[in-house]
Amino acid sequence: MEIKILKNILDRNQDRADEVKKELHSRKVVMVNLISSPGAGKTTLLERTLEAIGNSLRIGVIEGDITTDRDARRLERFGIPIVVINTEGGCHLDSHSISKVLGLFDLDNIDLLFVENVGNLVCPAHFDLGEAFKVALVSTAEGDDKPAKYPMLFSEAKVVLLNKTDLIPYTNFRMEMFVSDLERINPHIPLIQLSCTTGEGLNEWTGWIRKAVARELSREDFS
Amino acid sequence: MHELAIAQELSYIVLRTADKEKLSAVSGVNVIFGRMIQVVPEIFEFAFRESVRDTIARDAKLQIDIIPVRVKCSECGGETDVDEMFIKCNYCHSRNVVLIQGKEIYIKSIEGE
Image 1 (cartoon, each protein chain N blue to C red):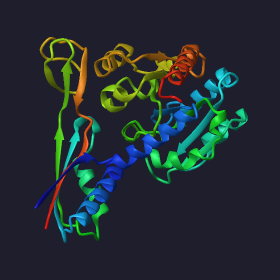
Image 2 (image 1 turned 135 degrees about the vertical axis):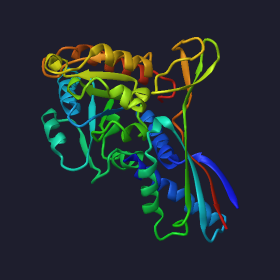
Image 3 (image 1 turned 90 degrees about the horizontal axis):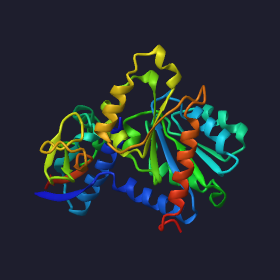
């Protein structure tokens, strides 16, 4: 006997993500899911972002790490609310893990909640956490083929940040290749080139994220 | 290894459905993945076996269908199965297209008695 089911296998994750999203909307918090490979510069990007706009936006961070709290310790000096989720081997965060820690934040005093996902370009792209949007971060040292090899992430993300542009002269990174692959996968996605070391392009990013937060908060379903 | 997390959720649905339908054994599980999900069938099979070990679905035959990424053109209305994930209409070459298939993570059905 065949029993037809036809449903999304990740329904339980999606249902919890919808609950998280609803809770964040009611508390007027914009959650951003930051996804990259290990070593692309997620934590450094958060450091530069906190230095630039940490005084004007109330920012919190959920640090997803397989093990250790090293990333969280790098952000301690900012005195912001940080919660660490150790996945103990898990290669991505899911909505259940986010839902469990949300109560540890004073959400009424947070505007922008960054989730630093586990370093991985594949798995995190498939699990909705209840975020407002995903940010894909890649670095030039990883090569120019990342959009072509990991299309799901670049198809899902709202913006792509290309970090470590100061290293381009020392790598075989071809900007034309990267840009044309990205355009073929997601023709309208904004690309911001930056270097967290030199500071190049950071203004463009902080301007973009400020506008994105304002745009999200003005949406009708944020109430 | 998103295969493992997907397989665990799949086994939850399979066993719950089997329980509801009062099956004594599950003989088949049929799933559909869009190509953009990048599931590796061999890894998924392994992850699924681990997830249903010691359950009434342990001998179930797993059928995995990978379906192509498909876009619908907003200019000419044509539908194209795209290769290499490069999103473009095959008929009028417009890039003004909407993705209509390719991100599925579905369970289609189960079989059993």
